[in-house]
Length: 82
Image (cartoon, rainbow, N blue to C red; front, side, top):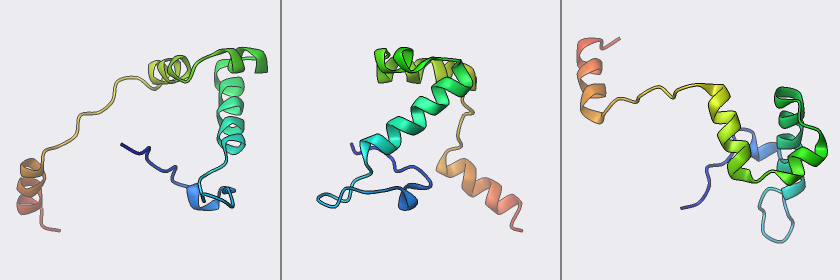
Protein backbone atom coordinates (compact mmCIF):
# COMPACT_ATOMS: atom_id res chain seq x y z
CA UNK A 1 0.00 0.00 0.00
CA UNK A 2 1.50 3.34 -0.99
CA UNK A 3 1.08 6.41 1.23
CA UNK A 4 -1.56 8.96 0.33
CA UNK A 5 -0.10 12.14 -1.18
CA UNK A 6 -0.32 15.34 0.80
CA UNK A 7 -2.95 17.74 -0.62
CA UNK A 8 -0.19 20.15 -1.65
CA UNK A 9 2.23 17.45 -2.79
CA UNK A 10 2.34 18.84 -6.33
CA UNK A 11 4.00 22.01 -5.00
CA UNK A 12 6.67 20.20 -2.99
CA UNK A 13 10.26 19.78 -4.19
CA UNK A 14 10.81 16.37 -5.77
CA UNK A 15 13.78 14.12 -6.29
CA UNK A 16 15.05 14.44 -9.87
CA UNK A 17 15.71 10.68 -10.02
CA UNK A 18 12.43 9.28 -8.72
CA UNK A 19 10.03 12.23 -8.68
CA UNK A 20 9.19 11.47 -5.04
CA UNK A 21 8.74 14.20 -2.44
CA UNK A 22 12.04 14.94 -0.70
CA UNK A 23 12.46 13.61 2.85
CA UNK A 24 13.89 16.93 4.02
CA UNK A 25 10.72 18.74 2.95
CA UNK A 26 8.42 16.40 4.86
CA UNK A 27 10.70 16.20 7.91
CA UNK A 28 10.86 19.99 8.05
CA UNK A 29 7.07 20.25 8.03
CA UNK A 30 6.63 17.63 10.75
CA UNK A 31 9.45 19.11 12.81
CA UNK A 32 7.79 22.51 12.63
CA UNK A 33 4.45 21.00 13.56
CA UNK A 34 5.96 19.16 16.54
CA UNK A 35 7.59 22.36 17.73
CA UNK A 36 4.58 24.63 17.25
CA UNK A 37 1.84 22.30 18.45
CA UNK A 38 3.61 20.03 20.91
CA UNK A 39 6.35 22.34 22.11
CA UNK A 40 9.01 19.76 21.21
CA UNK A 41 12.57 20.94 20.76
CA UNK A 42 14.42 19.62 17.66
CA UNK A 43 16.22 16.90 19.63
CA UNK A 44 12.88 15.64 20.98
CA UNK A 45 11.46 15.49 17.48
CA UNK A 46 14.47 13.62 16.05
CA UNK A 47 14.51 11.13 18.94
CA UNK A 48 10.82 10.28 18.44
CA UNK A 49 9.62 7.59 16.09
CA UNK A 50 7.01 8.25 13.38
CA UNK A 51 4.60 6.06 15.37
CA UNK A 52 5.10 8.17 18.51
CA UNK A 53 4.53 11.41 16.63
CA UNK A 54 1.44 9.98 14.93
CA UNK A 55 0.01 8.76 18.25
CA UNK A 56 0.43 12.15 19.91
CA UNK A 57 -1.07 14.04 16.96
CA UNK A 58 -3.97 11.57 16.74
CA UNK A 59 -4.70 12.05 20.43
CA UNK A 60 -4.78 15.82 19.93
CA UNK A 61 -7.07 15.51 16.91
CA UNK A 62 -9.70 13.61 18.89
CA UNK A 63 -11.91 10.81 17.67
CA UNK A 64 -12.31 10.39 13.94
CA UNK A 65 -15.74 10.79 12.45
CA UNK A 66 -17.33 7.64 11.12
CA UNK A 67 -17.82 7.49 7.38
CA UNK A 68 -20.91 6.48 5.48
CA UNK A 69 -21.34 3.35 3.43
CA UNK A 70 -21.96 3.42 -0.31
CA UNK A 71 -25.59 2.43 0.35
CA UNK A 72 -26.10 5.18 2.93
CA UNK A 73 -24.66 7.73 0.51
CA UNK A 74 -26.96 6.51 -2.29
CA UNK A 75 -29.93 6.80 0.07
CA UNK A 76 -28.99 10.34 1.06
CA UNK A 77 -28.53 11.33 -2.57
CA UNK A 78 -31.96 9.93 -3.42
CA UNK A 79 -33.59 11.78 -0.52
CA UNK A 80 -31.77 15.05 -1.17
CA UNK A 81 -31.12 15.26 -4.93
CA UNK A 82 -30.06 18.89 -4.86
